[in-house]
Image 1 (cartoon, rainbow, N blue to C red):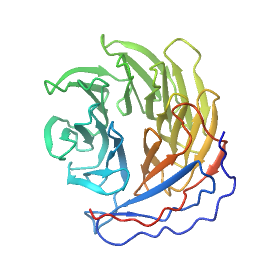
Image 2 (cartoon, helix red, strand yellow; image 1 turned 60 degrees about the vertical axis):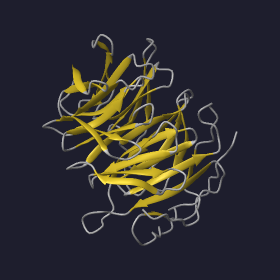
Image 3 (cartoon, rainbow, N blue to C red; image 1 turned 180 degrees about the horizontal axis):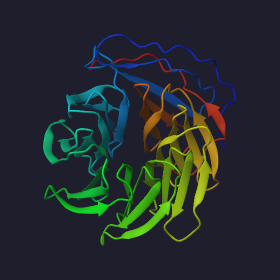
Length: 356
């Protein structure tokens, strides 16, 4: 089993390359082991005197070649994961963009945000296909169902709205346990839909019957993230109480993992055995959910890590420090191997820049 080095160099200044477009930065810390490397992408601002945007949404296309990012500058950008170059970018919303989701075939991208709009985009051209809804309240999260036939959305009210993509219309509403909902996820087998929000309750619906299948007071404070395990048997949730909660859909006892001293702002599964979480302390933690132990800590962000996405051997993170980080691991987390519980940072990557 690969091991991380315990030694971490002093923090170095991040040197951004000047000019329009995207720039790779010198990482804030140096990884001495061979387990993880990190490439940092800085996004040049388009408004507010070129202020770089806070990135609050990241989605990876199913083929793992591209990622969509969005945030407080109201724009959506499509990036090449391998090079970091911007392939498409456009003004998309009238306010902060909070959530992005690719359809399973990778052809459509859904977006939503504080302006209450839920929009479908052509993922290749970044052209608007249709506006599914324009609501009077902010939308915090949207997610495609695994079949691609439905899209669920929720936000600052007490309902989850479900849309039929083929008919492009709302088909049902599910009553939520809180008027401030922040997290939403379909199970991979599309049998269940789970959501959580301000009061810490995670509610699970049966998709076919639209009835509540399970409900739990999982957190003491606001729920920030929800994800189903790849086998659809477990729901992972995280929240501002510093907890990661693993709930079984098979009647087994729930598991609580504490992450003290931080609000857990985001999470995603990295294969069946590992879970990545992002914190308000700027760290990413990798957890072995079978052993209920921390595998590693990834440092480098200088602001809360509020969004994570994983595909294959690539973990993408972003947040309030206005950067996107692409982490790569040599170990096979998907099949269960991982390192020791050491804290690591970013390996230096050569400067690279591709015009926007």
